[in-house]
Amino acid sequence: MKSQVSIEEDKSWEYVSQMVMAIMSESGMHLEDEVLETIIDKTFQDADADKDGKISKEEWRAFVLHRPAILKHMTLPHLE
Image 1 (tube, rainbow, N blue to C red):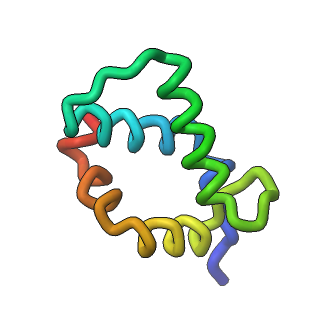
Image 2 (cartoon, one colour):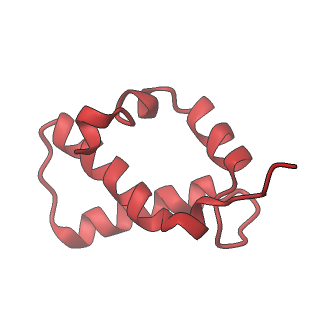
């Protein structure tokens, strides 16, 4: 039986943060920390569809399916 693992259990804020920073870097945008944190928080809130403070695999899948450009930035070269 597969265990139900949420991104929250694996430090989801850090994962979302890395993804947002990779996207910003890729686009050449350099934002103040406060603005970047707001974007990261909003991204987390948008992905957490059931608002339980966790992002399940199903929630993350639905989130990126509606935003396919995000997947481009989820590769190892972009997250290193």
